[in-house]
Length: 322
Image (tube, rainbow, N blue to C red; front, side):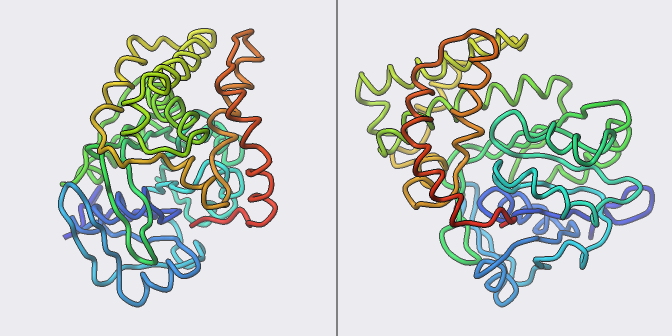
């Protein structure tokens, strides 16, 4: 039975049904929440025809039937919008979010990086957007099929203003289901930067070397390079007024906990020739570093080396939700 708030069933829309959206949305649907998935192409067709399959280290599951569409207008106003598109799609997704907004809607970002929530506030206005960060390693295996390969899944959410906080509070119980943790935190910006240190530091070196995490952490040179890349981000954060105690050591501990064949989305996308989060990863670190006078040589190398590949992929791919 769907969880209810104020006597009404809670409806969740998942905008972007890739590795992150399909996992969290799938777990919510499995627990009886009213979930609508927004997807496109073969992935959407497969979900409509045979549902959603999720292979997970936390337990595999199949949803034989799901509600899936490529048009948010068909869904209408909901209570929670989980924005799970890639960071490069966020700005363009604002228009598609508009039909989902009702009198108590909260829009929750899940993107890697630290800029998505501000981009949506700029386009949707204050009071609606809660910044979030998703801790998970997951990806699309094929149409209608997602794999969670590592990391105990967790969603951290924080309101950006009091108006959003009043909307978020009664909806948090709907986001707490078996299969992932979900916490509301006061300092969500710090949580986002902590993840950013880890995933972007690892991502820069992984994108340059095209190696899985096991090979990178075992070789002294690349291990040290990852630590240095993480430290560049930590230094930028400090220069921007964000305190991140032990972020590098915590990031390396997470790196050491991953299965040796794990890869990061940035390297997978660049290798596949599709648009990646390069601009939100090393590109952002370089921009922040320039603005604060912090040197970021590893991220500059990663950004400038990969930018031609990214530019070519962007020209060939529309910025639509998936």
